[in-house]
Amino acid sequence: EVQLVESGGGLVKPGGSLRLSCAASGFSFNNAWMNWIRQVPGKGLEWVGRIYSKNDGGTTEYAAPVKGRFTISRDDSKNTLYLQMNSLKSEDTAVFYCATGSNSHDSSDFDRWGQGTLVTVSS
Amino acid sequence: DIQMTQSPSSLSASVGDRVTITCRSSQSITTYLNWYQQKPGKAPKLLIYQRSTLQGGVPSRFSGSGSGTDFTLTISSLQPEDFATYYCQQSRSTPLTFGGGTKVEVK
Image (cartoon, rainbow over all chains, first blue to last red; front, top):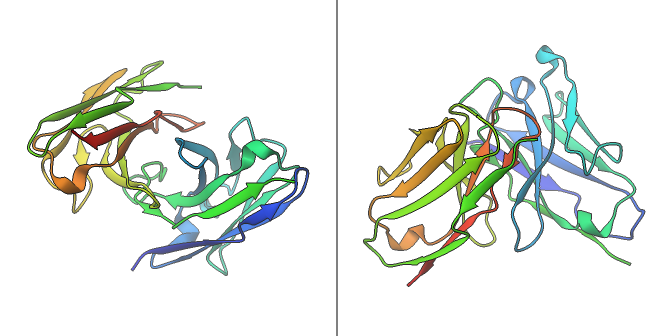
């Protein structure tokens, strides 16, 4: 069974840092292009960024609002995806999901999602 | 960046109704268009990918069409479990972007 399980969310002060994790199982994690997507409670979905598989270069891409503040990384030996979030702002408050797709090489049609972890940025 | 615009933002419908949701992209995305269903407190669920391919396990009352910049999600006969919010998403290029959502409510 495919599973993605996020952890690490919580309450953090503006300007603070937090690291989210996403533990994957049930599929070939090392070959997957992994994504972070967030959703402000009651609002729409926003792609945060992705990391390519090592075979495809292992590079990262980010959405403009988080570029320079967030860093995506992966540990294929642990089947785990990470999101390091620095200089957090109130507008970063959201549920963060990890996600990937199995229908296409670029994994951009997301049929695999975690349950989400809530990050609240507030003083 | 490719902007995705969904309409309507909400609609009221009854069980058995035919429901149509539209999604427009700010530039051509050929057929790189996906549709998701989300229920409160849950992660989105992929319904349709690459414009019209039904994800495994998704009922055949869901269908997708369109190309270029204009796309449609159709539910041929709305069922009680279909009341939810629906999102389109383009996978043509990064940053990957989603529409604002369409909430399908009980009439």
